[in-house]
Structure formats: structure tokens, C-alpha cells
Length: 270
Image (cartoon, rainbow, N blue to C red; front, side, top):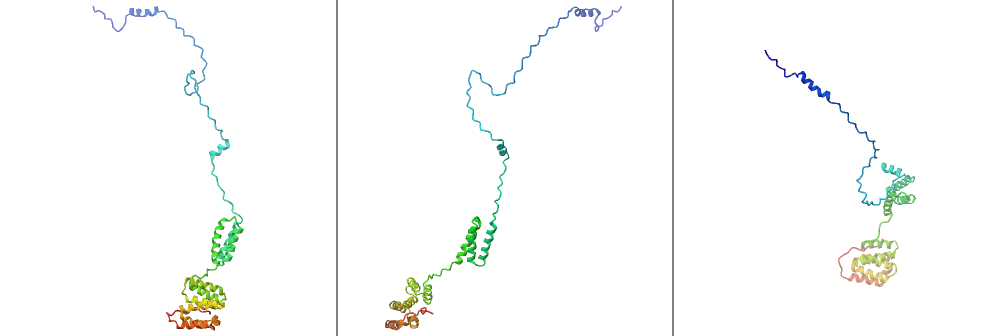
């Protein structure tokens, strides 16, 4: 008869009972008691962050605090932040400026029309009547100097011996004998052999009555230029001197002297 095989996969009822038995025998252990919670400690204030403090045993040396600068007031701080730009207003024009310019232009018009004295007087008024108009003063002084140069007479002082002899002739015609003598002496100092100066100086001295001095210079003129004899015979200021023996002897000596190169006739009075 065939034996029944036990299935390996299914447990028997007896084994099931043994496995369940220990569970029924074990007693439930009481739950462990938890310790009571400790009362909470009061919270400490949070420590400020800073440098680590050294132990109290070592005393720390502190430097004396620096004096604090006083804070500027609020108004000053506001001004320093904004820093507005300063705007300089142009100076107001003076009420006299228009009058000064009008007078200045009047002086320039007179200068353009060659009325130099009137222009100088007008420009001087600009300086005197409007002392605050400095800009106009500089230009006015410049034109005043121009007017003064035009007003001043030209330098008529003769410089060469020829100019001095001509000026002496005009002075003799005008009756200024002393000025003529001064000019002729100056011409002879520059040019000692100027026969015209010697002739005119002799005529000038004869007109003053100095016959000895006149004959001396007339003889020198004849020596330098024998052709001046004709002028000596016709000179009206020598009329009194021509009647003297010294004058006649002078002419005779000049005629007997050897003739030199012919020179131009001396200048005679007209």
C-alpha cells in the first residue's frame, strides 16, 4: 500500500501549537518610566559680538579717548551736501557811463576833423568829469598825446650852417640883429671857412655901429670869396662904412690879391 508523503511546505498542527505556546507563557513587561522633565532655565541675553575678552587676571591698559569734534549744525550739514554754485551778478551799469561815452565820441569827432585843440580839451573833460570811467581814461589819454603833438609847433631851430645863415638873414630883415649875430657865430663854429656867414656877420655888426668888428669879418669874407666885392658896394647897411678909408683900403687889397676859384655870391638882404 503506498505511503502518504508529507508535504514539506505545510507545518503540522503540533508544530503550530509549540510555536504559539511561548507567546502565551511570556508575561508583558511593564513600560519603563521616563524621568520628569527639568524646569527650563531662564534665557540669557545674547552676548554682543566683539573681540574676545582676555582673562580677568590680566588688567588691560586702555589709551585715553580722543576728544570728539563737535558735530556741525544741521543747517551747515545741509549746505555742505548741496554745495550750490555761487553766481556772481554782473555789476550794474553806472548812470554816468552814457554821458561819458557821448563826450568821448565828441572828442574823437573833433580829432577826425583836425580840430586838435578842441579834441584835446574835450577828452580832458572826460577824465576830469567822469573819474570812475577808468576804461575811457586810457583811450582818452592816448588821443590827448596825439593832439598835443599836432598842436606843438615844429622844431624850427636851424641845424646846419646853411640853415643858420638863412635864419640870420631873416632875423636881420626883421630887425632882430642880436639873434642874427648869435646864429652866424654858431655857423662859423661849425664851418670856419663859410664866406656867407662872415659876410652877414660883418653886415650885422656894421648895423650896430661896430665898424672895427664889421671890417674884420668883411675882410675875411673877401679873402674866402673875392667876388663878394660887388655885394659890398651895393649893401645898404654898409653905406656909412663905405665912406671910411679902412673900407676903401680893404677893397683895394682884395683887388690886388691873387684870384682863387670862383665861389657863389654871398647872400644879401632883400
